[in-house]
Image (cartoon, rainbow, N blue to C red):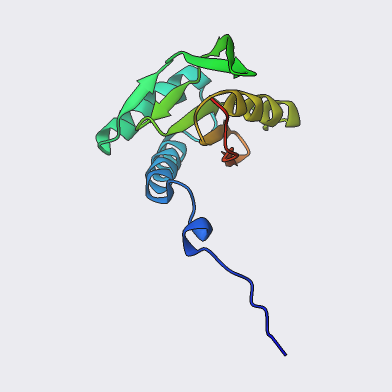
Length: 140
């Protein structure tokens, strides 16, 4: 009798950009504790940029990202922020994140070269952070 054990790759079990995501989440919680869901997106966005920079992170704001289809550029997407050239942040300030918001963000991530995005909603009902990963190998 041969016992077959599943092979587990310890690296794959690690969260993508775990430490960086932890820093971003911490900044979001700090801003939410201060402001709650009472302010418009623009105010939250500026406060979050300040907090992320205070934590020593590199922030690109409103950077144009090329979107590709079948290897050809078909347009651009401008996310709210890119942190350390690794994670796209999309900031919302509304009652809740819709399925349409999630689908649209997924498609932007899929069409870009980035693997991880955080869809963050500073809602009056609470802070909601959706971690969206697109790690499928892309053809250049």
